[in-house]
Length: 312
Image (cartoon, rainbow, N blue to C red; front, side, top):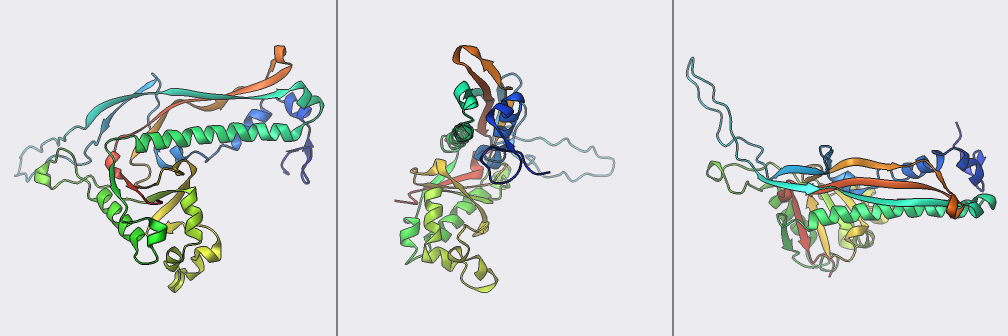
């Protein structure tokens, strides 16, 4: 079935603003669909338990291993129950964020499709920006993350030495060698994290495309066709890590190496939702209210390393 579009599209059935308003759910549902898979916080953190009471209690740096190895048991011997050190107990509270989309009588009568489309984009972009900020606040604001200064500015120093590779290798090592604190088993235990994601600013992502040293990584062998100058886009893997560009990192002069889905969680008291379009008679308008009540936190901050000074 061909998609239904607003009047002014060059293909598919056309729909006027007045016709869209006749179905109270059409505009809210259409706007919600534009926000699917757009939130950095949902892509890089895991979905935590429902925050039905408005708060979430969690254990920070909870060990994934028992304090002792499996016991050697004689015949008829009792099998011991394993025990483990507990992480520090913390509590976080949900916050409601919302924005309304409004359609005026004039927009309806004049069939101002462009204005409606712009308002839908504004709602989407505003929510995406807000929840990208939430992700950065949860990650960069956590005192438990590991951090170090870059060997040199990544894209200018690369012409003489491979500082990106060295810094990424160091960060991956810090994630994968992380141990419980305080250490148990005489220091033999480890947390078992595996770094798999590199988060950079969109500014650095653009500069990657035109950097000779970065492109040299893809210059030979079977991956020559992945050259950034050839494809015009960032690779799916860079030194073994998935690359994620985040506009919320612009101006922060930092890069993030982490294990996706392990470092932390986002929990919803209620997920992103929208009301049906309802009439706002005093303003001669119709509106839909978009809200989400949620909280994000790191319960495994050692699964994150932040490299500072990467851009200047």
